[in-house]
Each structure stands twice: as C-alpha cells, then as structure tokens.
Image (cartoon, rainbow, N blue to C red; front, side):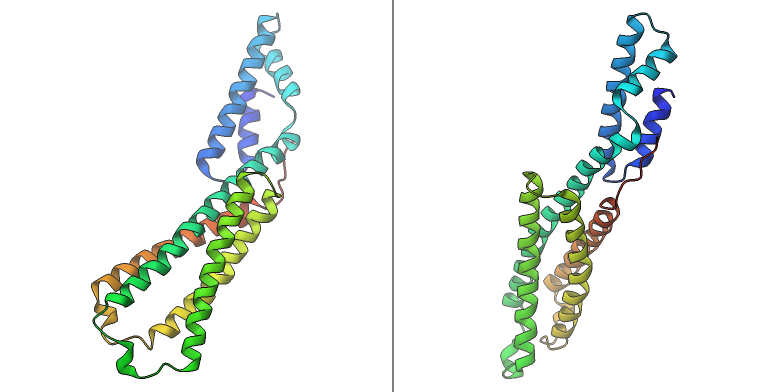
Length: 218
C-alpha cells in the first residue's frame, strides 16, 4: 500500500468537524512521508520505503479509534460551548424584549397557574441545558471523561430539549401582549433564536454521528 492510499482510507474511516479532521489526516501523511524519506535515505526503494513507513505507523483499524476519539471530543466541545453561550444569550435577549415591549401583561389580569408553571419550567430547562453544556465543555477540555459518552449525551439532550422548549415557547407566545409579533426587537430575537436552534441541531446531529463506534480498515 502506498501512502496516498493509506491516507485516503484513514480519511474515510474518520468522521467529525472538517477542519480538525483535515489537519489530522495531513499530519498523519506528513509523518508517513518523513518516515518514508528516512527509509529511502537508508537505501530502500520508494515503494518499499512507504510500505515500511505504513507498517511502522500501524494499520488504519488500529489508528482510527484514537483519531476518532479526538474528533469526537472536538465536536462535543463545540456543541458544549454553543450551548453554554447561546442559551443564556437567548434568555437575556427575550428578557430585554419583554421589558421594553410597549404592551403589558398587567392588562391581561393575573396569569394562570399553568402559565407561571410553564414559564418557570422553560427557564429551568434552558438554564439546565446551558449549565450542562458548560460542564461538558470543561470535562472534555480537561480529558476528565470518555469523549464518546459525553458528546453523545450532548446530542441527545439537544434533540430532546429543543422540541420541549419549542412547544413551551409557542404555548407561552399565545398569551403574549398584542403586537409582539410586529415588535422589531421581538422579530430580531426570533431570528436569532431560530439561528441558534438551527446551529444546535446541526451540531447535535454531528455529535450523534461522530460518537458512533469506528469501523477501521486493514
């Protein structure tokens, strides 16, 4: 097997963020080329030198899991950071919108018990998701946990929590003061919220994909 073929197989065996994955594959190729150059300088033919370099580096099925673990940790750290930043930003953003909206909840009279419960539940769920994202980011950055387990849990949490928070938000929106839908800050807040949700779903899907067991090649 030649180095180019080996690197191609390695790239196919890995899944994760494109930038870090490309850097890993390029680094592996550079190491193989350096080793092959050393063998060739010692008198081996180029093809033989590349074969010896690959044997020394190890088969893809043995190398890929270590590379994949790092890619999995990278994906988890990215989602953890996104949750840790975007969830509090979303909460603060909507708090500001409600504070400065010209309408008033007071004109609607006392809010029903279910409304208060749903509002507090939404706050707790969002706070918990953001805190878990921060804790996962810290744990992955310091190598305190298995990256596959934590990264997968982040993906599952997003896919479970977003539908719940989305439904709660829609229910609470039905009791909002009149004119909120046309209030410019609320429109902008909705756009930012949907953008955050889209990024979270994308990253969560990738986390679920990369945390699956690797099937390397010989």
